[in-house]
Figure 1 (cartoon, helix red, strand yellow):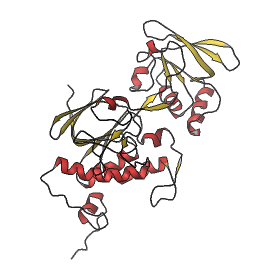
Figure 2 (cartoon, one colour):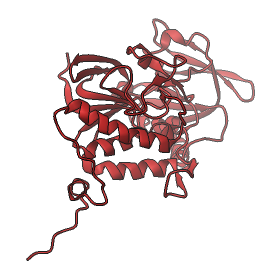
Figure 3 (cartoon, one colour):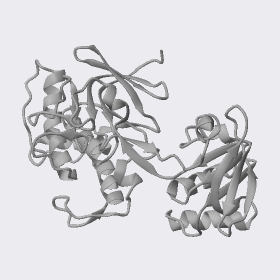
Figure 4 (cartoon, one colour):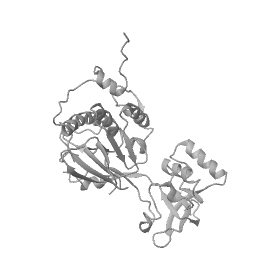
Length: 349
């Protein structure tokens, strides 16, 4: 077994609610590691609508989803949280009291005293493109995420899609692939304009190909794709030789492995919690944010912030039942201000 990473708290999900949980736990001297299946911090805010305006964060009349994530990262910087991206938690086991073993799909193992599930609506799962017979190639030569760039060195790579992920990986893999083709069904993109401009520059320099069309089928033996059949927008068809296909058709939310961790579930998709501490039916495991359920639940970011604050208080008592927990305010507590690095300097005498 991989040497476990030991910490006070493992937070599953690095969206706004998971990030704010770091702040509340940090005030109580609990160290956090965060695990997220995405390749970036920010959860749904970062992946689905980074530019979406948000108007209901208390005291902030307007911000963007991306702006909120950036502000939260700045807020939790004093607590030095550790992030593990591009990893999905597959198993959570209780191995002590209090102690859990958390294992990811990449074989990474954590041992923590508390587990906090802040996974929004569940884990992001890639949408499978409508290509007949794609299943035998998945995981061998068709990939929905890039775990290690080196796996595509000296390969003929075909990337399909027009969003940020497709453009980002086009730019990142172009220098190491022997040949790279970007295929999109239209000339308009849903990606950052700067990324589109850089991609078109590579096309102009003859370093990559850009094709308008859609993959209709694949060919290759034993799970190894050798070519993709493409139908262009004018109705013609041709072949693209490739060793690896990366389709980026967006993501959907599914509960995923969480459903197998022994919780009571509401409608097979939400985790019931108590409203005193937001603890699940398993002591020491908490659920905050959109993934939890209780009477009167509102799926709002501000509700998740409230849940994170109460969760942290109960988590501390769970880990340290013998310690007296004194409630303090950041506005008046010099010890909390010191943790945040904002304590005023005392005048020298």
